[in-house]
Image (cartoon, rainbow, N blue to C red):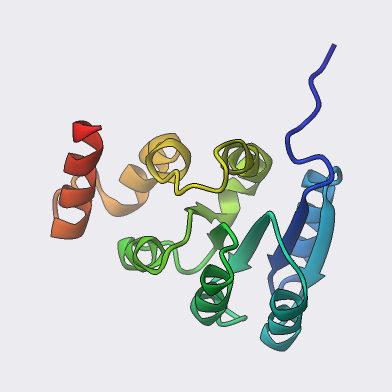
Length: 164
């Protein structure tokens, strides 16, 4: 017997300016109460007037980092989702601004599992377990195998994980 998803009946906001991404996420998260916003202003209204178990924000096209500030200030666990801003800088900025995770759009099929981990973890920041460990090969291929060693921020982050 299959176990029920921890996302069942959780309220999730997805913000993306690409209708096909909103549709895909709707299919992946059909067990959730899903709010969809295709632009910044609509997203601000949703964030201002609702409470969310998880928020998923595109970076480009909807001012995702500004929305992250709002979402973070309301205490909503927030995941950054992007196609064009898959860079060490965007990853670092997401981490620094309080996002709980980061996922490239070409790995969107893994979004459900990532959100399940976040909900089960109480919305804690699960960077190593969620984004960095599961997508380590992806990021190594995209950024080079030494990308974490090139930047003091990532070196310190990896070192802090080894202490735990």
